[in-house]
Image (cartoon, rainbow, N blue to C red; front, side, top):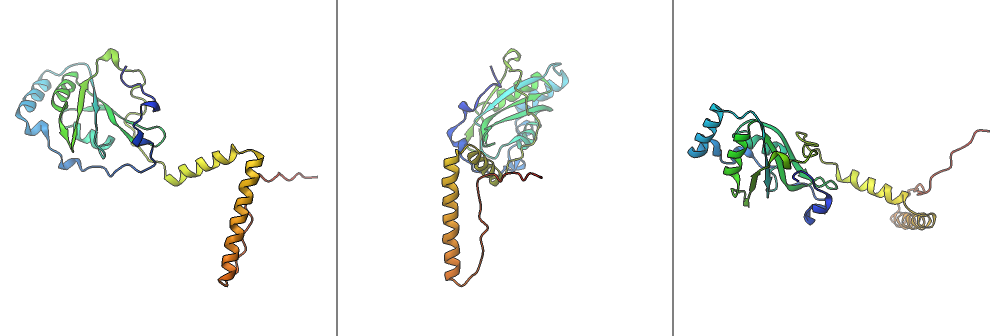
Length: 214
């Protein structure tokens, strides 16, 4: 069923903590709905006799830089885009290179699928298919129409570090604290040799006991 996936389906390259590549300039892409006379005639016919139901397409092999905002801007040349969801890696937030796009007309969705399937876009041959209504997963639109805000890498590293510290045993915490104190002592010695006086505050991984009032 379309729209259901797990992290097991992720591409291995998505596991890297690198930032997404810069978004592409949609204005530089060809406007098929205007330039292709056959597509233009089909869309004009669909507008004269609009379908009452909406249509959903699956778009695969999406190139880097073609994200939610860019896709919505690009595909509105065909018709009104009502919902759009780009699949992203839950751990890293990176694009998983496929998306689901809903148009306000099923006939327009079919025209888009016929036009964009096997279409070469930025070196990628796209896969574009209409999804039958009975194959659309109920959770397909969870998170749709939301602008992705990447989590700062330093925050991710800090959270992972804190989790690792909390999961340590007392013995592991003691060893980590000794290593930290040793590094601080080495730094202090080097500074003193350079004629710099600096007092390090001892850092501990252990939680300080709460003071009790008598």
